[in-house]
Image (tube, rainbow, N blue to C red; front, side):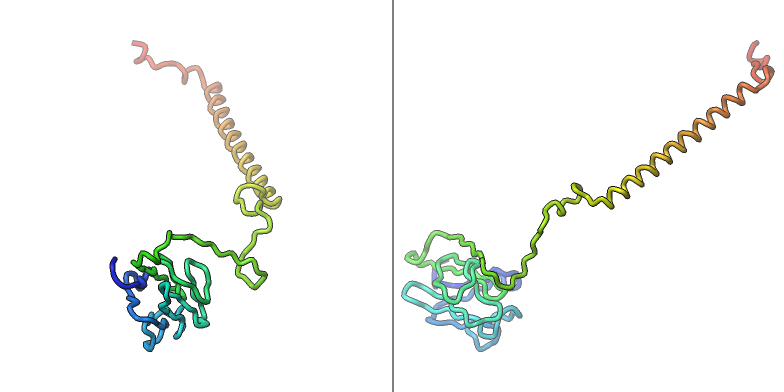
Length: 189
C-alpha cells in the first residue's frame, strides 16, 4: 500500500472507501462542503479535521454531537499513528500511513471512565438472582411441590385402576364353570 496517507472506511455502509490525505488539512462531516463528506446520521455537519503536522496527521474533534474516537478512546485532538482506528460518529476508518518514520507497533488502549456522571450502565446487585436454576424463590418451590404431588396421585390412581382390572380378570376366571374351562373334544383327539 504505497503512497499518501489515507483513511480506509471499515464500517459496513462504506467498507473499502478510501480518502487519500495528500493535502495539508481536511474537514470531515456530513455536508457536501467538507473535503471528507460522509453521509451518515451519526456524523455532525462539521465533525472533525485531519491536519498534517511535522510528525504525520492529527485529528481534531469540532465539538461534534457523537464525538471522535481513536482506538476506541474519545479524543479532542490526537496525533495519528499507522493502523489507528478513527471513529467519526458511528463510522470507523483505518488510518494507513506507509511512512516508516511514523509507523509504530500496533497498540491497544482501553479507556475506563471512573467518573460519577450519568452513565447508562446496568448493575446486578445479587448474582444469585441471575441463575435460572439455582436459588429459586419459595413461591416457585411450592408450585413445584404441588405439581409433583398431583403427578404422584395420578400415577397411584393409574396403578390402582390397573390392579382393579387385573383382579376382575382373575375373579372371572375363578368363577368360571369347569365346563367352560375344559378343552374341546377336537383338541383331545
